[in-house]
Amino acid sequence: MPVSFSNSTSDPNDEVKRLLERNLETSEEILRIVKSVRKYVFWQQILSWFKIIVILVPLIVGAIYLPPLLKGVFQQYKDILGMGQSVESLEGVDPTVLKASGLSPELLKMLK
Image (cartoon, rainbow, N blue to C red; front, top):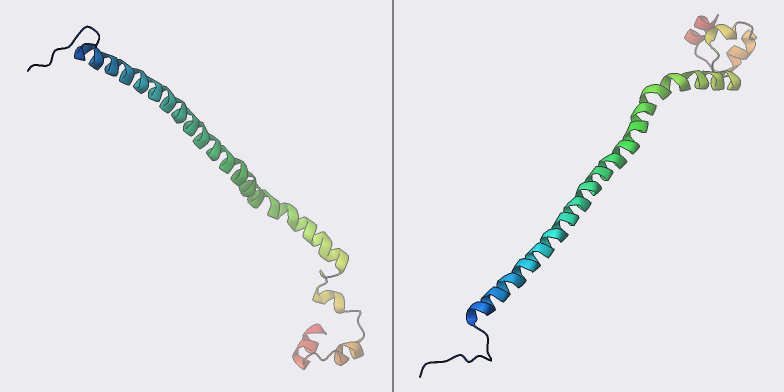
């Protein structure tokens, strides 16, 4: 006995059309969401590179320009502490103090 469709049930072609339209709508919605996610990921990548640049550039610039500037500061600091004295500044020191210092005879000859 063949199956007959009555007017109360829909045509199978109409059902397929309805499902295809629903599938198309869902696919378009997914496409919109994917586009927004792609934009978000793109800007996150740009901002991550920007953060890296903001951190690295000052470090590199500091490594290049600070040593010459700090050299003068360290020299002033050494002068204040008296660490910058050289051997020539020992000329006015009493020789007995030098002998009592425990220096080797070779060094004492070099200092005189």
